[in-house]
Image (cartoon, rainbow, N blue to C red):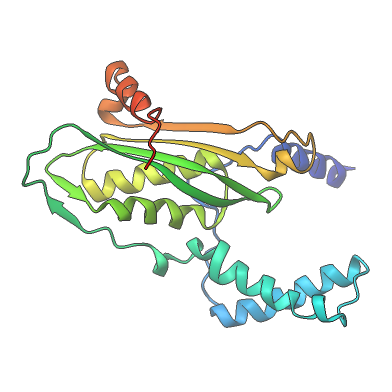
Length: 225
């Protein structure tokens, strides 16, 4: 009875898309195994899942799927779990004395919902106000990509991006808005294909109404080339 109650609570937690921590939950021995060892283990697990579903893995189309999925998990869509892949974000002195906010908008987000392991796809918009240093534009895209490449909750992803840039730039004046579709909502459950989820995190001056409004107005601009 207690097990059934716990399972119901866990199911409810996932359907409501509730996260439990600002940090990605990781075991202390998460990197005890090499990537190749992880791939070998996951490959067998995927094969077991497919066989349990009744699929014939002797078929040429399916035979390589367990290995492909295992490599994808470890080296691609969950590669952001590996701290060695964290992008080095070199900063530079703000010699041109640019004192207004800098906005990087429409950064592509590809992530994975940690509750159902289905894709999260959307756009991130980031802004900061220099405190004497600036960061290369592509580094902001790489920071988003790094934290997105792990099982995620969108709220956590938004916070992690802001906290990382605050540390890199040595300023609290950082903001992030993410607008994304969750396939765990769009393709299962309620199956609402039109809805998207918007999350935001505002630090420092971006907590002020005027600064926050300026940022939100910028990301509404229709940029076409």
